[in-house]
Length: 294
Image (cartoon, rainbow, N blue to C red):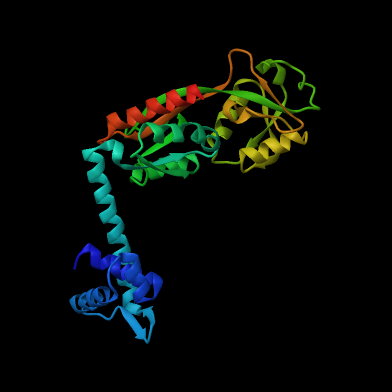
């Protein structure tokens, strides 16, 4: 039994047809059928129920197929690790990004990184910060773009850039015609915020705590886009990261803050024990350069 036999097994299970499975695996149908029978003999169980041209996975076969899929994934991961150790720029890496950053930063930096490192493959995952940290610690992703600081001696963080916040108001709001605002302009105001679990919510709450500003209790959004649209209908005001404020939707104004500007620090985070430390620093440097050049 070898990994190729397991690939034949999974192909037949998924396609339920020996001919199409043989085409997928780029072998003749007799070759594939012979290897499946040898695999059944080796394991001592019937993996498929055959009725003419129709093929169904047997009850015992279902468990074997699931384990075969897992072994194939492990084998592919082993190959990927070996390639990365030999040539980090030719490897496959899983990059996590939180939702209020991903749609604004990734279109700027990912195409430029691919142009710089054409053999590099980035698999992108968009999730809330606490999910990304858990997956990073479990080894399910390799790097994560997060708002700093992050807690834990097991992680290494490379600061990339500071992103200022601006104030989002409707064009009917009393502050709409201001060229800039300060924290004092928002005293006793209430901010619309994202729901629990979003790091942007935590950053906005920190601003509220330091500047006598309160959270609005009437509404919480599950996405930044929803939050912006609610502000546009004059249901409140909010803080918006600079990259999300490039173009104001109709009936909305983005107003910059005067110094000291509220901001968040974006960094690239990876496991401290990772063997690709130098390469991850290279990726971080490219992200910083291409973000600043955009």
